[in-house]
Image (cartoon, rainbow, N blue to C red; front, side, top):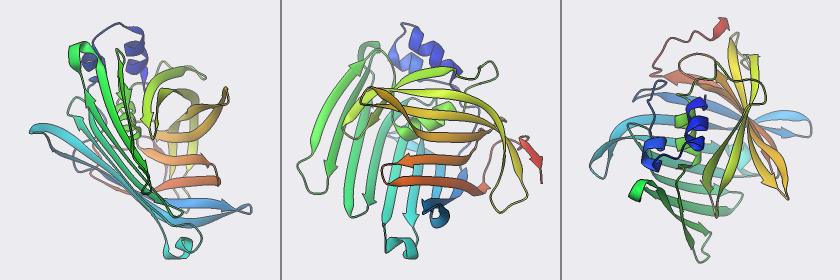
Length: 267
């Protein structure tokens, strides 16, 4: 996972070339379903669900993958904190990012985000648009010889990388566009770990990665991913450190998976 990206960041090639990659992990029609949990006074409470879907379609007349991630809290959880999020990403069939949109209604606040990608003269040019509630939207542009990603296009890209030669602590920097920010972020490989699914007699052999951001000059772990150690690289567990607490997402169902699930070590 992410081995090719690390090489790309060190090579002075055109952005469009370094952004492309072979998709070896997923196919059109894959749908993953998750249950969301939140830590409330040392007790984990089910608060909602999420669905991740990948479909082959077209973007501006060209073949592409459309990825959507929708999350929502349950009626019970809505009384305390309502969440209705939808993330949409378009990537070319070679995984080059094309467009990203996020509509997030969380705790009474609506945040909207749009990102357009272009690749002029061998570089990556990004235009982003962001608005909070009905405030005046902010726009910015960014151009680099390195590739830029949003959350969904990065997750798609990462699923096709090979981590067989990674050592624990291996770091991969990349440029992320998120909200008002277009900044360098870091993924860190934490090693392998067996993970037993909550409420099911299934254990997966997983690769573990941390997503880090800098806050006041210090690195902070925002997300920890557990992905299956097989050709699918399915995210089966996601730990999130939020401003208002800790949340987890567990994979509960799947259809349209491309490869045999050889990472299952116990049923």
